Length: 150
Length: 180
Image (cartoon, rainbow over all chains, first blue to last red):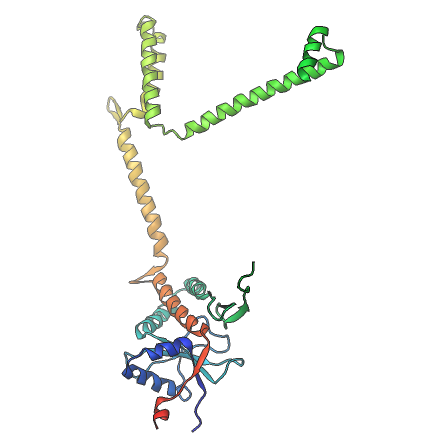
């Protein structure tokens, strides 16, 4: 069997290292199933346009939910585990999505605008001298002002 | 230079061409004086704008004016027989003390100004409360609010975005495969 090339972000790796052995085992099992099982689509802004976020819930209900996506052409590997999310937060988002599905389109637009505004962040710590912006699409790293300039 | 010139002109009289200039200068000075007076009045009025009608300085002034008018009426002989001898005083005094009057009654007609003011204040508070309630009810349905939903989604999205921003860091190793 050919092993799928799955990569973890630094945040996901750090979260995985902090888990208890039982939770970590469940998360590893969920990650192992990523190539064979298609996770549930997780509609939140921030993903590249062609590669939406997917979510897979480990069998252990206390273990965090694995949020992942397919890699883009300029990323290495086949899959990227983006984040591990607290199950409570994950289910709250799912419930929120269901509630919003029944809401009028105008309300959905307002909520989407609020969410996208919250996600439009500037992570200056991506690498020294660069700023990574994420705003409803793939992160874009832009060259920053060299330190000491100005 | 101007002083010597004016002194010389005072002795010899103004040359005819300078008379017109002097007239223009006087007119300009008058206009400047008028503008200065106007500015002083405007400043004074602007300062008055900050004084509340029911505030202490104006209340004291009003009652001093009432006292002054009463003394003036008394000094004129406290005339009561022709109406024009006392009605103007009463009208002016009535107008001055009107802000302090809580209410008055004439025959069966009773006007409680204090009560009316309180009612208006209460009504205003109720209108404001209703306006606030209607603005929040736009985003409230049942026991959940869209604001809360948006907050939950935004928090999750921010967490995922933050994770994504850290970039692909490590290739995942299956612990079971490593153990085997």
